[in-house]
Image 1: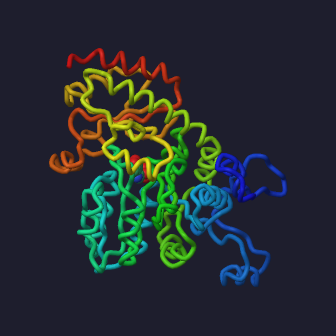
Image 2: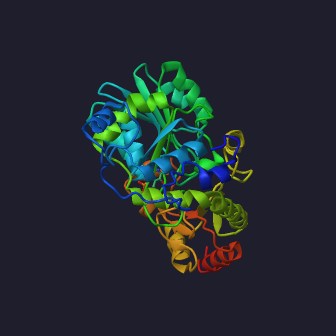
Image 3: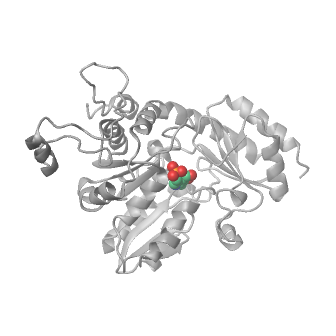
Length: 394
Ligand SMILES: Cc1ncc(COP(=O)(O)O)c(C=O)c1O
């Protein structure tokens, strides 16, 4: 593929392995294994003397196409496609730590990500310190000589807080730690963590990359050396591999990613401005607005806003439930990044397992709603929200 091709072109063509039939669309290679011409060929493949696939848990042609397309988009050297976003997060963190190591993570994490660092890693003797990731001084105060991993998502789920990725990477480099960024909310189009100095990027491909509510998937991207030395064996022997069918679905998703994300972001920007003017809305947090508390960091590290909006209603949980229940176009669902607009009440769904205190620290209250804007006509979304807000008294 031409290195000068722009992202939208590479997202349609990069990595295609066309078979002898010359198919236009990528083929789905639904196979568990691969047949060798003879014993010597099998031996050579296992020794790594010849290229080729060995077993679908290690890698397979459709997955390879998906990984190559993601590598091109992200500017990475290598990647592994995983069965879900959580498989990617777990593998990216656990493959590189051992008992006695230490992790520093932002406390504002998706619930399952927080489980990995706060509950699971300590069971294996890996300590974790959670910090308010918005202030670099907190990261600096938490690092120790044995800190191996610094983990964050930015913008965060659901309150769209932002972490200074370049700043965290600078601190990590001083002690030889690796920065893992969950880039799901920013999308690969609007934020390039590797260019900002992060070492590993993970995605839930379930979100914008599929974007059409069909299948789960994830991906881990980094430099070749880190993958060879840390992830390669872990991935082969613990088995978080993506199904080739899902890899094919996600390849199709990548083709339309820029079109969808651009439309979703344009809608979200307009809806955020609309909501900010509504008397029943206490607060709107949107990375594209000037009043975002960390607008300066956003300007430094993101090239677009977000498909997501965090809304705080004055009337608390009662108002939040009433608004959700009155919506017709926008569906109640805890997923995000979909073509369909989706809304969720984090305190009772995605973040229900946190203590009241932890939720308060993250700014999640009874009145908080997270809206993921889809590709519907923006006017219909504004009408839907107008109608729903009219049903609450305050
Ligand atoms: C920020 C973030 N990271 C990771 C995940 C996990 O992804 P998956 O559901 O594909 O396992 C999610 C899912 O909502 C998420 O929002």
